[in-house]
Amino acid sequence: MELQALPSRIGQVRRIVSAQLRYWHLDALIDRASLGVTELLSNVHRHAQPDKTCTVEIELLLDRLTVSVRDHDPRMPVVDDAEPLATCGRGLAMVAAMSESWGVRPDGESGKVVWFTLPTAAPAVAAPPRRVRRAVQEKPARRFAVAEVAHAADGLRPEHAPARSAVAG
Image (cartoon, rainbow, N blue to C red; front, top):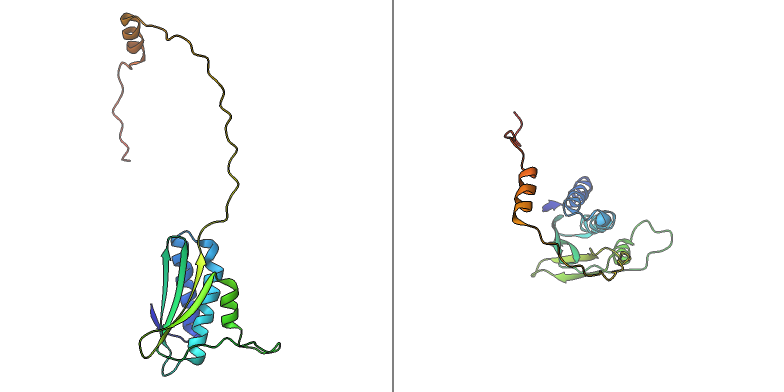
């Protein structure tokens, strides 16, 4: 989706990303994906020039979710050590800490893409207990007379069964 990275739009994008992850049954990734996209959009709002227009993409491939934000500012972000009392400057460090991987790449002559990935595979669950197989004693098959089988089949057949419909009304 393409948007202006304004504070009023960031919450809307978080809700859209959350809804898509729920649709994909990836509820466990919602918090981390929302945090990451919020940080990337906040960086576009704070730093991108000449405008705040950007594109957010989420892509699910095999066992990995990739979230990327493309803007029109060719300057690459710099990860600095924030002062202990600083109120900003930790966004990309948080993205790096909560994601599997992240990076930035130039996008043509006038832009860049900042992205991060999250693993989608669920943690390994203990295998269910295996069934123990017991040896089965072989017994000779019982032979039925043709008359016996015909009589048994007649006894199982209903005399009259009314028609039924699966459609109500």
